[in-house]
Structure formats: structure tokens, C-alpha cells
Image 1 (tube, one colour):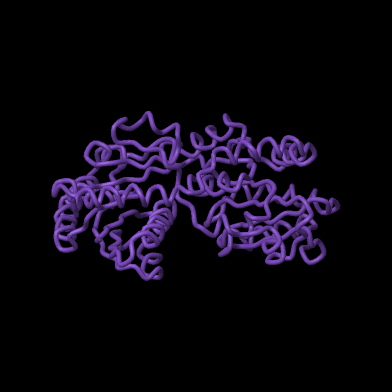
Image 2: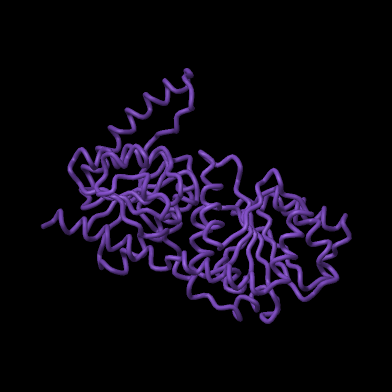
Length: 372
């Protein structure tokens, strides 16, 4: 079975694609994959390191108003479509899967024109513009959020949830605590603004951590993002927080073992990217969500509000975030364990830990129908 997978630009498109590939590999021995992305996106760095064959299409997103740059990009889009058709013709896939990003457009359109089954995976409550357009021509749509089902053609959409790494579910609390030098018996708050960090969250956490120094019954693991790490350390020192003297507070620039951190988290402070939320709900972790305010079409706030309505999270908008607002909400939730327990149950009810397997089964079924 030959399978093309495309997704680019951000980790939120790339890592779900990799997870789907690994799930298919477990089910179809000898399956051959080709990943299609761009030279400029993160995929150009990540995919070769995963040991996957990689091809590129030169395309960029359009600006939302008429500009000379858009004319140039329109020309690149046409050339990209021609390139995509050659890739599809040469590789002869049984199915083409897209997980988002502009690069998906030409490759999925080319496959559709060649009558090859196509599948897109939409992670967010509010679909991106590329997937909204592609929904008109693709064969099936694997929808990550139940609330997004109404935004796609009923006959095409299948609610699967968002794919998560298998290690998210296999990681254990005790091993996580040992990994980070924390106490597995204590309440643990995991703070992360994503792989690049979130300045608003980091700044608010300075006051939170300064106030937490005398109270060792709760421990914090704060992931700042590499670009923010030194600034956070300097601000903590200025606030009188000396990390060597407070073993219940850990500050890291980046985690390569986030599943271990999640395994020991009783509460998370996160942005509201779809992949992070899928992992939190799969493990049933309550969350305080601070949606990134500049996400396309404000999709992170829609993601966050969906969890809030279900009782799995509380939301603080970026403009309202401060050390005071975050401290007050943390104090409320950490002091009333029944609230955390109720939120954890609600979070777990939203989790779809087998989403990757369901998407893999859907893709394999579509490919097998073509062969038949």
C-alpha cells in the first residue's frame, strides 16, 4: 500500500500526521509512505529525522486582501499544483491524507482529480481555510472536535478525535516524578505555552511562582520555551525565587518527554492548541486554558470554550491574564479537590485515546475500496 501524507507549517499539523503514519504502519506491514511538505516549514526539519521519505511543493498562504504579493503567490500555487500532480503520478498512492496547512491544497486536489481516495484530518473546532476548501473535493474528513461536525458535509465527516502519541497513554506518574525530581504524592501543576513558549503565561507565572515559594504542598513544572527561558530565570531571580532552594518548583526551557510530565500533572496551564488539548483530555487532566489570541480565526478560543462548556477546563483570555488572575484561579482549584476531580472526569469523557487507530482504519478502508 502506497500512502502520501501532507501537512505543514506548524507542529500542530506535522505531529498528528506522524502519529497517523505510525498507526498505519502497525496495521499494514510493508506500507510505503511519502510525506509532502514545503522547504520552509518545520516539516523540512522534522520529517527527515523521522526517517520518512520527503518531497516538497513550493507554496505559501495568501494574504487576506489584494496585494501584488498575492499575484506572485497565485503563480506559485499554479506551479505547485503541477508539481503536486507529478508527485502523485510518480508515487501512485492508494490514498492521500492531509492534516492541514497550505501545502495540503495542491497535493489533495491533484489526488482528487486523479480519482484517488483522499482524507483530511481537522484538529480544531473551527476548521482552517485550507480544510474548508478541500472538504468540497475530498472523500472523507476525520474530525477532531465534535463541535466541528456541523461545519462539514454530513456524508463525509466522521468524528474520530485528534491523534495522540501512544506514549501519552503509557507514561506513568511515578516515572514522571522521578524524571523531574518531584514528589509523586504532591499535587502537581504543569505549565506550558507550547514548544515555543507563551510570553503572557511566562510573565504571569513569575508572580505565581514567587507566591508559591513558601507553600510546598503543591509543586510546579513550568516549561518556558527555549526563547523565553533566560528571561524567565532572570525575572524569577529578581522576584527572589532561587530555584536551587525550592525543590517543588522546576523550570525547564523545553521538554522532549512531555508525556512523562503529563503523567504526573493534576492540573495544567496551557494554550489551547488542538494537539495539546487532545493529549490532556486523553489523560483526563483538568486545565486552565489561555488561548493564543492571534491564532487563525481565533480557533484556539473556540477550542478552549468547548472544553469549558463540558466542565473540563477554565478559560482566562490573554488580555485578562495576570499573576493575580492566574493565582486566584489556581488557589480556587487546588484548594477544592472536588472541583479538580469533577473537571478531571469531564476531561476524560472528552478524550479519544484511540483516535489515531480510528483514523488509520478509516484510511486503510478507503485505500482497500479503491483496490477492490
